[in-house]
Amino acid sequence: MHIVRAVLVVVLLLTSSVGSVVGFQEDTSVSGRPEFTAYIPENRIAPGTDGTVSLFLVNTGKILVSGADEFEQLVQTARATTVSVTAPESNPISIRTGTTPVGTLPEGVAGPYPIRVVVPDDTTPGTYELTVTVEFEHTAKVITSPDGSVRFTERSRTEELPVTVVVEDQAQFSIRTVESAVAVGGTGTVTLDVTNDGTEPARDATLLVQSADPELTFGAGAASAENFLGTLAPGATTRVTVRAGLATDALVRNYAATATVQYKDAAGLNSSPEPPRSVSSLNRASLSASRT
Image 1: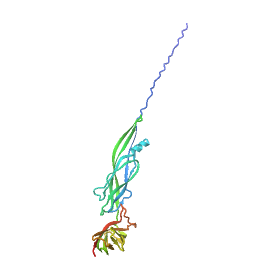
Image 2: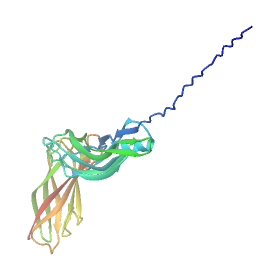
Image 3: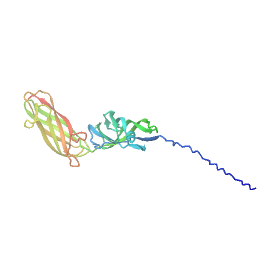
């Protein structure tokens, strides 16, 4: 008898059940801040100036963590911005403009902002430093969550920026009435001393005297008189005599005239009375009327 043995091989298939792994998505962020530089392009002024200079701010911005353009623009933009300028106590220059609100400043150039500057007559020529203080609010960070929600981190910031002004060597003048002998209804002479109190020679200088009263005239009944002075070195004084007349119905009193000196500076440029770089001198000359 034959016995047939069958070996039954049972193959067990083991299957591994691999679960799906869900990836964890992190928040994304953009961060940065505004960054300012201050400029006064036309910063050359003269002793005796009381005028304005133009201040500009440049916001170059700074990105710390980059991202979407709209958020990069946001973190570089200053809001509720104010600007002020101060001079140190040791500085002879004084600033007469207070804090100026300038609002929202994105990346780029902002201004001009007029700043009133007063420079005493006896200020030594040279370079003087001023401080520009910029205060602002800004969004420091924008955080975006995977669900699309956005969070903002806000900051307040103050920046102090240096700027300089240059007080130039300039001719400056004082004009003093030495003598006046003009009778009501007649003519006479007025003698003036013109002194260059500045630090630079005045070349081809001309004195223009203009009447501040219709009853006072010069020369042959004109409202003004002009006299050539030549070159006045610093500290030099020259004496000028002009002929003046008073109307027949003029009162016996003091009369005022405006005296202006115009000249060429060391560069050969004509003086200009426009602030803040004034190289002309405006003075009041007095004239005493008398009876004949």
